[in-house]
Amino acid sequence: MEYGYYQLGYPMKLVECGHFITKRGWTHKVSTRKSDTEILIGLSGDIPLAIGSEKFNLTAGKVLINFPTETIFGSTPVTVSSDFFWIHIINQAPLNIAKEGPTKPIPENLAILPRSFQMTEPDRCLVLATQLLDIAHHQGHASSADYAATLLVTELANDYLNQVQSDTTDESKVMQIKEWSRLNINKELTVRTIADHFEINQNYLAAIFKKVTGSTVKKYLNKLKIDQAKYLLLTTTLSVQEISEKSYFNDYKYFFRIFKRNTNLTPAKYRNTFTSTFLNNPDIDPGYDIGKIVSVLEKGIDEKKLF
Image (tube, rainbow, N blue to C red; front, side, top):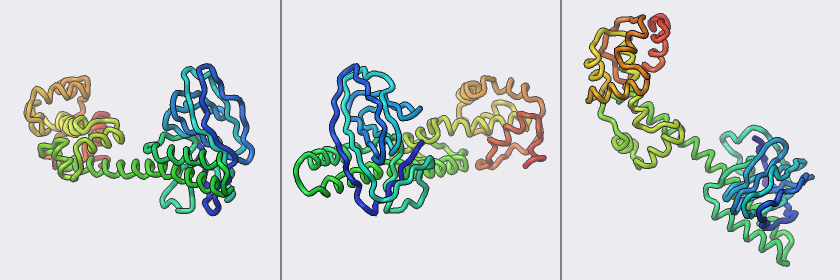
């Protein structure tokens, strides 16, 4: 994806702007930018668009940027009534178009706009866009519209950068949660106990964990326990009942059901399928990272030769 790095040493130069309303069947005509950038902000409906070979759908709260020299056109006719703001600006300071997103630290004199993104806090930007249209279409000082356009660009950039920084923060927090949970898997962990330890809201914990990992906290905790059970099945002669207990499952029937759900095999079948076993001490430290060891043992390799 392309990113525009707009230097803010000088205000943007507003070329023109407007509020476009379309009915079903309309198709955006082919339009090639010269030295200006076109910013489209979706208000309602769904407008199929293409920039070069990339296709997009401009929907409510979505921002689409058509950088200088690029061509935009409708990929298919609009199927529902739709409307959007459009703003054409020229950067008076240097503009760099890159395929790499922002890295930290982000200079304060830069406004970074990606090709496309969904605003998380659209109200502020929509108010500024409405104000820009009002300023631009009423007589007044010529630079007023330029500064209003510059403010809108910086707020759009802020919305995007806040998302990037939030994602980074969430990933860091989830890594801490996963590591702490792994080290404390021998305890009675729940979403509530983990949230209490990290002093965060349970719903927030569940939401960021799902966003970052694609899984629930409960599934992750069960996976840690199942990895423990797999290790013991492959490296000891303990009974399945004993392994259930040493894998921190309080309910044997629940352990059996979760194990089969995760592996498509019963514990006994799993042990018999991977016949190469290496007997070890079954008293494993609860924080021992055995996930990668299990994958090695399943291939019939003694982990002591590698770790």
